[in-house]
Amino acid sequence: TGSTHNNLAGLFPSDNPLWGRSSEGSLSDVIEWREWFRLLAERSLLLQERGEPATSGGEKSMAGDPRELGTVNYWRWKDQHLVRYLTWPAGKDYDSKQHAPAMLLVHGFAASAEQWERLMYSLREQNTMDGKDTTPPIYAVDLLGFGHSEKPGLSYTQYLWESQIVDFAVEIMEAAPMIMVGNSIGGGLSAGAAASLGKKICKGLVLCNTAGVLESPETYSGYTYKKREGATTQDDDIRSHTQAAMEGNPNEPYSPVPILGGNGLDLFGTGIIRLIYPQIEQRLSLIYGNRIQNADPAVTYAIQQSAMHPGSANVIGSGQKLAPNRPLNEVLLEIDGGFNVLVVKGLE
Image 1 (cartoon, rainbow, N blue to C red):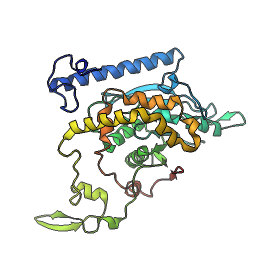
Image 2 (cartoon, rainbow, N blue to C red):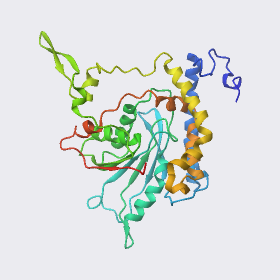
Image 3 (cartoon, rainbow, N blue to C red):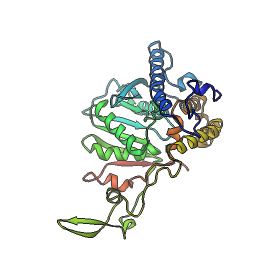
């Protein structure tokens, strides 16, 4: 639509991301976007009730490896933001005391819970022997800003998403023991969330093509901060990324969006979406490489639809201002004895 259609109220500045939004325009976004996502959720649930496909990909043709479609559910995180999640029921012969715990699947950047449907089919197949299905209950959540979850005008960081995962595990999964699986940035998020949840809840971690780094304590050699002891102050060494962050990262100040601020992020995100949107199908073909048939219209459409939701530009732009992650080795060793971790890497 043209700029006149984007500014029917005659607000100044208009909706043009180059100029940003007026206070009135930002307020209208909060109200209208929330209603937009509520209607999207109602549509999905109504389609599901009718026995029709209730996910984005379900509306398009599917090819490649088989899928098991999940049940669509919604949750209001912090009683504010609408979050979609998919569930797959435990097998008829599943016993939580004898078999593997529940699983929580966390997708990567610009993806959604729908990316796990093929894995779910494979897991069900592997856990079914001699007619007995012992598949554990499985959950996959749309991170805020992706999939069918709301895309409010927030400052998106990995710590926001980690907090969402922790709350989901406690509120929706009722703090039951589980194994967490994360792909790409979802791997780094899962590691942080697992450290927060602790070993009583998170029994293991699977990191698929994970984001994150490993840092030697020697990396922080030479970092110091002023340590106050009573009435005196003395220099003390910093020994970890976490400690450096707690002390204000004296040698690496964090500047999220220089000069242009949030308007620059929106403009950048809009540019990225316009550039990448026509290339999504081609890029997926490259990503799926040796299983190119899996880059089907269902996968393509799920990503395309999410990219065109209101608020997407801010979310995509946030990828350029994420703060440095806590190194995975520090995160995972926060819990006494560490976690059972499986690291899975693709061909490239």
